Image (cartoon, rainbow, N blue to C red; front, side, top):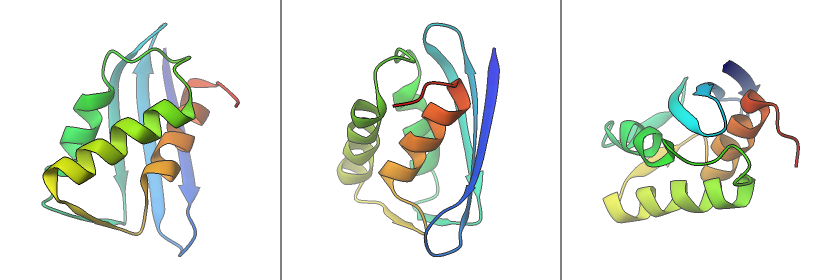
Length: 96
């Protein structure tokens, strides 16, 4: 299945998350008008979520995303781990 969630997060930046999933996340695509440096941190976040159960929960997803940002020393401006996790949960249709 596929799901999409789009949100204007606090501060006015657009975040769009597309998720291909079944009982687990197969692929995530994160786009929008936010900024990330280095830019490949978004791809690393997407890859870190692959294979995660859709029922893992927003908190676990947020933690995985924060770990990638911290380990890479990336700057992400306009969105945060919580907004990404929240939109993934919306995209897969799981309400917390």
